[in-house]
Image (tube, rainbow, N blue to C red; front, side):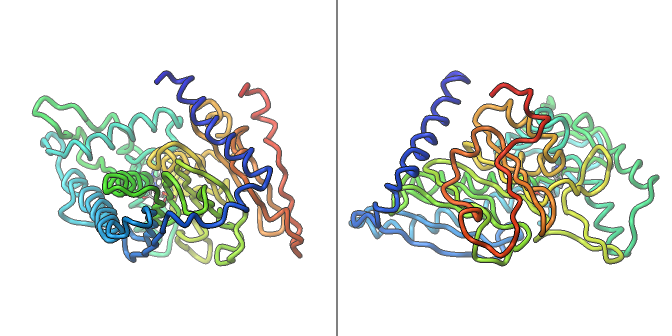
Length: 376
Ligand code: AMP
Ligand code: MG
């Protein structure tokens, strides 16, 4: 499919939903008696909680167990291959290898590394899994209760970059490092990839629809029992509140949110994000949360990390990508603003603005001035 055609399909699907929503039809649809849905939660999947919802035809309830097993297996498989925390993962072997040693990798892991390298280029270096030496430096410094020195940051940065890796070595499918200290952390894309793989697995089993949510990285497909899938974007200032910041509606889409309200570390009473800007070598502080909608979850995941680095300044770049929409929330609890790409609005079916809330929500449905020059 051509880029334009692809973009158009994405756009038309969501415009269709928006129109349906506008006339309030979805609320009247109710539960479809021909379909049943079943949700199960698993702890400790890729360091977070995974929730799987499967939808099957009412006369095919025997598929439910099979689908959950297939989804769990898909997630576990990604974790076993790509986790930096499992000593025996493919990625751990790559990270432990000295320069010059050929490290064989499965085509799945190699494909994700190549995709990641392309995403590093697309995001102007903001999403960069080779930043692991920097991530480790900050983690160790935090354990010692101190901020790394400029010299330590500079040294770690020297080992960051895809130029330290040969992803197409002569020996076959695998990687050769050029630098002993070079390492990769796929934490910014692996959850998304796992959600994509789990959706593929439940689709293969014969489900009519499904939703995979791995710690805020979500992928939906097909039908929910009420028509479209409705997803709440967590309020970054009240993460434990049952009331989401926004409700979004989808059929087939991926939605990922990055925010440092859940995952952060503390040094001397100051909170630092778990996302590092590879250019400055420092944890990011430009957005309260970032939500990205894309066709697949790996893409949405990587861009949510990238836009956490770039903040609203990255919205023109996001705007220029096919089939990618983004929301960046900036500010604080008392005064925050929502910035989004042109197409994001089409997904919104409900926002806190619609409720009388005691808080002053300065949500502005406008884009920042920097993005005004971009032609949608
Ligand atoms: P997410 O969970 O999608 O917000 O991604 C955050 C995770 O990605 C972190 O826990 C790190 O493992 C990794 N990470 C942090 N900074 C970056 C970066 N600039 N590029 C790629 N991955 C990163
Ligand atoms: Mg991410």
